[in-house]
Length: 588
Image (cartoon, rainbow, N blue to C red):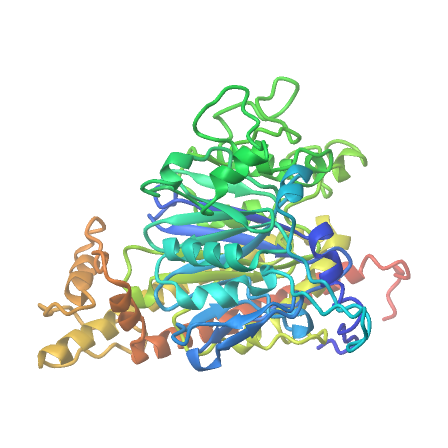
C-alpha cells in the first residue's frame, strides 16, 4: 500500500481556474440498431484539467440524501429542487472542495445521463449571448460603492445532481436541463447525453442561455471530441413535432437577429457546427484528430483515411457527427476507441512509425490525465431490475480495464466507492495511477501484461453479467410463483434455478422471461413491452434483486482487485529492472 502523498491542496484546487481552457473529454454514443445486442450505449472519458489528478468515486445517492436546496460551489447559484427525487448512481469527486461533479449515472427509472463533454464556440455566439459568470462582491458591505455578489449559471459541477434524479425518460432529461439553462444560464459550453432503452439524446449548450438537442439515429454512432458537434439540425421539427430535434424557445430568433446562419443558400437542415462552433488551429491539434481516429476504426473501408488522397484527415473540419458503422459495435470497441493513442499511425506516442514530431503532433484519446470512463448500457432484452449496466474504469485508459457494475443497488463496492485523496493502492483509482506511470515508462516491456489483464478481466466481466442475469431470472420466477399463490422457486447457490415449469405471468414479465431464456428464443425479448415510468421504478425497487445485484457487484470488485494487484506486482518488477542503478552481477 502506498502512503506517500496527500494531494489535497494546489493540485486539486485548480479546477475552477482551468476548467474552460484545459479540460478535455471524449464521447461516443451508439444507437440501438448500431450496437451488438440492441442496447443503447453512451460512453465518455472524464479527463482532468492539465496539471492535476482528480480521483473519482462510484456511489448510490438515496432520495433522503439528495439536497432539497442546491447551491453551486463554483458559481454560487442557488435554488430549490423538487421534493420527489429518484435514487441514482453518480461518479463524484473524492475531493468536494470544488463541488460534486457527478459526471455519469443511472436512476431507478432506467434513465442514464453523462455530463459533460466540454465544447468550443466562437466570438459571435458569446457576443450575442455571453456566459453567465460569477461576479464576486466588490467593496465593503455598507459602503456607498459596495456591489453585492452576482451568482453565475449552472455547469458541469451541477448538471447530474440537478437533473438525473427528476427525469423518467431520456427526452425528459433534455427538457429539464433545457429549462434550467434558459432560466439560470451557464458559464461554459457543454454537451450532455441522455439515454433510456429506446433512444439517446444529445444536448449542446449555445452561449449563456441557448441550447440544441438531437436524437441519435438508431442505426448510427456519434463521436464527440470537445467540439460543438451537431452538423445537421431541423428547426422545423424542433418547433413542430420535436420527434428528433429540440431547442431553446427563441433559438430561431437568436440565429436570425445575430446573423449566425452561415449557409450560402437558404437551406434545411441548418448546420449548428458552422453557426455555433469553432474552427481554430488548436481544434486541429486537440479535437478533430480524435473524431478522425474513432471513425477510422469503426468505418475502416467506407472511405480513405490516410495519405494525400484521404476523404477525411486528422485536421478535417467536416468529419460527420453521426454515421452508420460497418459492423455492430461492442462494449470492447467502445473501450478501444476511448483508450486509443493513434495505434497503427505515425501519431502514436508509443509507436515506431513516423518520428518524434508526428508522435506528439495530436492530443490522444487515451491520455495520462483520464479520471474515469463510464460506459452505460441499456439492454432492452433484460428485465427492468437488471436492464442497466454501468461499465466503469478509473485512471489512464490505455492501462486500465472496464468492468460491469449494476446501478440498481443500494450500495457500491468499497474498492470503487472509497477512493481517497491519499494515494493508496487499496482503491482502484490510485492503483491504476501507479500502474499507468510504471507502464508508460516501460511500454514495450509491459504491454503484453496489460493486454492479458484487460482480456482476462473483460471476460470475467461478461461472466459476472451472465451470472447476475441468471440469478435475477430465478428471483423473478420465485416472485411470480409466490404472487400466484404457488410454490416459490428458489435459486441455487450459484444463482441458477431448477428446471422451469409453467410460471404464471406477473407484472414484471417473469413468465415470458423464463420462456425465452430456457427455449433459447433470442427473438422474443421478455419485459420489453412499453412500460410506464412508474412501473419501471416499481420493478427496479425489488429488494431481493437489489441485494443480489449488490452481491454480484462486490464479487466483480473483488475479482478486479485481485487481478489489478497481480498486474501491479508484475509491472512494478518489470519497470524496476529498467532502473539506471541496476547491475547485471547477482549478489548471491
